[in-house]
Image (cartoon, rainbow, N blue to C red; front, side):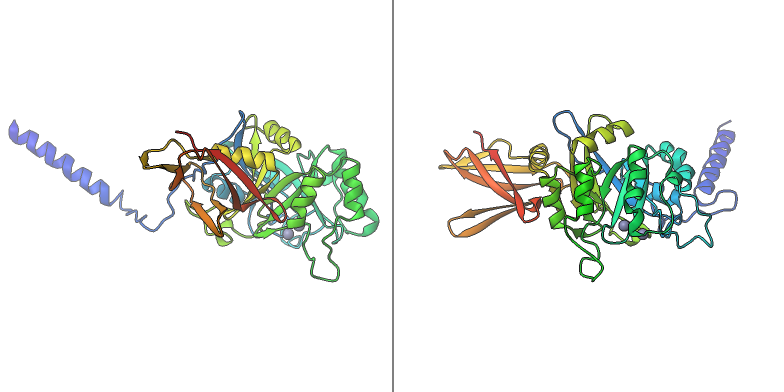
Length: 377
Ligand SMILES: [Zn+2]
Ligand SMILES: [Zn+2]
């Protein structure tokens, strides 16, 4: 009996060890394969709003991009995004000899795939006029083919935007300083944009596009109360554009929404509750930036007291980076708060609060965020 049991166990063991190395004659060698996982980006919310990570400007083969729409959804899943919008050019379709021109197709192809991956897909298009006036993204459209495809001539610039207005789109001005250095370009608050703004048909502006910070655009966002946007405008693979990994991320708009839904995204964009994020840099309106900072950074309580000096461990629970600076006598003191980490800070008795400038966070084109926090007992 014992002998039979031993043989059964031996047989099972051999079967198991065989299954580990080969599977019906196929050996899996996945050591160098990319693990299937979705990155978590830690950005706390505030005042009951949650932070959604969004990219509202990217291209596919249905305009001048080099990837199929499903790749955009796959990238967004891996990189931990909540919301994406494929905004293919209306007036520029260089792949038309190979890909049938259909401005709704990139959305239709991946609508259910995005839902399966828990990604909110916003229907969009890029109104691609000569510069000036430049390019405008229209979000939450119903029918891209009812916009104005074809030749971008000054005579129908207004009509092109009006078609998006007719669909109650959320419209933002893309890369406002693009081609600024060329004779044809401009980097000004032009009449065309001024009129759109006065008619309440301009809702947002790209402050960050790819790795460019349009400083003037942040001033215009503040002065004209436009929503601050940051997007990749990616045409190839994001992995060939950004050094992706757990401590890295693509350029994106942080949207502070009441709920994680398309309606929630729209409400937050219309209310202007956004922060632009590129590399270690942040840009946005002062009140929102202050709220975000407070939600991320906490000096805590002193853990030690030596003489009149109190010791704090100031912590940053987010994936954001904060470079805090202040003038002490004649020198600049800097505290680098790396993502999800802490730093030491000391304060004398009686010093109950601290003010810093955040050198990597902008509230105007040339003005940094100022923050203050309490140093309790
Ligand atoms: Zn393009
Ligand atoms: Zn563009």
